Length: 211
Ligand code: B1M
Image (spheres, rainbow, N blue to C red):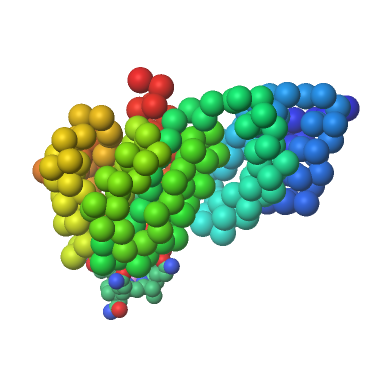
């Protein structure tokens, strides 16, 4: 019988092959895609997120867990679409203009996907207008900006301003993060939420979408 607890545990260990096989087995045995997603894959990613926050696991473990999550998602994605399962919300994410660091941003994106959010990843060196275009094009509720340089974190203010100029500032929540970013910086530029790490960012995004 399909074992969602084992699925969650394989995911936490980053065993992509086993995660894919157990996900397929659960599907073959008639479990719904939502049940497998929440009870197996997302449950495992939640544990990894908490351990990462508590410094019990580190970047490599998160990356291999995320790879295993993707292996399971490959099986579930078409079924979720067929079943009309709605994503919890949509986030447009990117590293701001002038900044090429993407490891932290990728982790945030993976954690958010692990929470059942749809993530549109614009990559690195993203100009403010691109964030606005992508939020409009994808009906996203959240824009998430990452910056690793003290010189580029100022670009986040331009992102806030670009939404104001487009007249859509009240339709989107602006999340910011990255090593040099702080809560007071977030407030000073008129962004909505600062998160210190990937797991907190994913939790905050879910709260914003569920609010
Ligand atoms: Co660069 N770099 N780098 N670098 N680099 C730093 C950031 C630096 C602190 C190193 C140093 O001098 N000690 C320094 C910045 C100094 C400053 O501005 N205060 C620096 C510099 C100066 C530079 C260059 C200017 C160097 C040069 O060319 N002279 C150059 C800039 C290039 C550019 O962007 N235009 C540069 C280039 C690079 C590489 C390309 C070589 C490479 C990036 C590779 C890549 O990302 N694909 C690189 C790397 C790897 C680093 C360090 C070593 C590691 C960054 C990293 O990936 N950390 C970094 C020093 C360090 O941090 N020890 C450094 C791991 C990652 C998981 O953490 O990204 O902080 P982090 O993400 C965390 C949180 O911050 C948070 O969640 C993540 C996980 O919990 N988070 C968010 C991130 N985004 C978030 C968004 C959110 C919420 C949370 O909401 C939206």
